[in-house]
Length: 131
Image 1 (cartoon, one colour):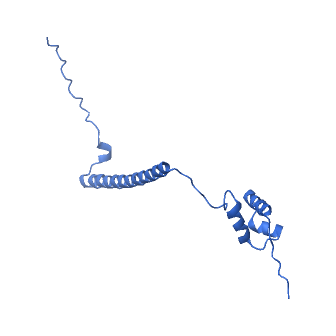
Image 2 (image 1 turned 180 degrees about the horizontal axis):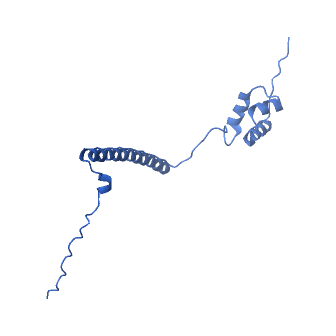
Image 3 (image 1 turned 180 degrees about the vertical axis):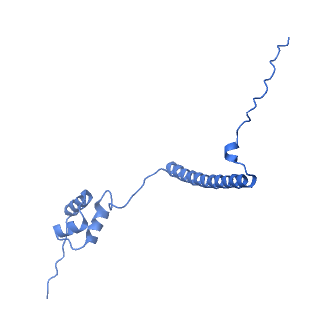
């Protein structure tokens, strides 16, 4: 009958492995260096002893008012993006209307639009002070 060896690791050893992992060592590297049989073993130690957890996990701590404010800002950004999209469509529509009208009437509305005539407006008579 073959003897089965079960490896037991101390808490200090497990914590040192976790610290090395947090410092940047890979799971494979740690397994080879210390003769640990499975990466799952090290992952369990990381879950138990690590302050940061897995390096790839992101935990965001927010107060309720911060979370509410963030959601309000996200909704505002979404509304502003929709408004910009609508304004872009409106601008394109108006530009196409001006282009069609220019072709239809033979005038260049873009150049003539907003120009004042060369005639100067008559000056208004000065007011007389009434007493």
